[in-house]
Image 1: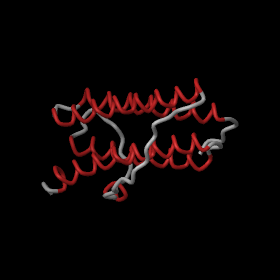
Image 2: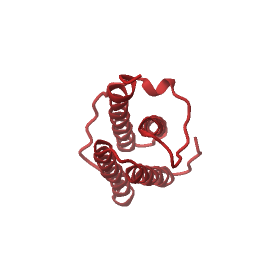
Image 3: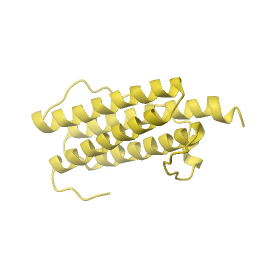
Image 4: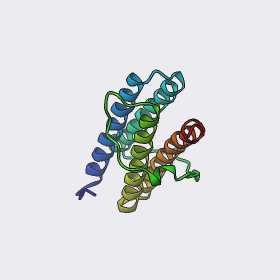
Length: 152
């Protein structure tokens, strides 16, 4: 993990990570022919934009409200996958695997940021974002379980 010298540096790092997620899901959206996955990617793009905007609001205004934390189930499917690279010939299974691994990494990022946050509000925000990334991962794991593992 990068060393941060201020709350603003942490927020800038997280905002950049959310923008990278927006770009990632936009790329997957443009690559897939599956209408179900297009819908899922569109939802994730909107959610990642919402996360980015919440982080930006906290940075700009110094406060944020309306964060609710809930436990999210982990199917742990991605725990047994190796890293995959994005490429032009990615099939449905490949794109799900890449997405699961990215969401797992995003969850870890926000969990780690929550641990080093210096205010309760920042801890709550990063915990909330970790939970959101866990929900994304669950959605991909469920899709993988239903449509890939059942076929094999």
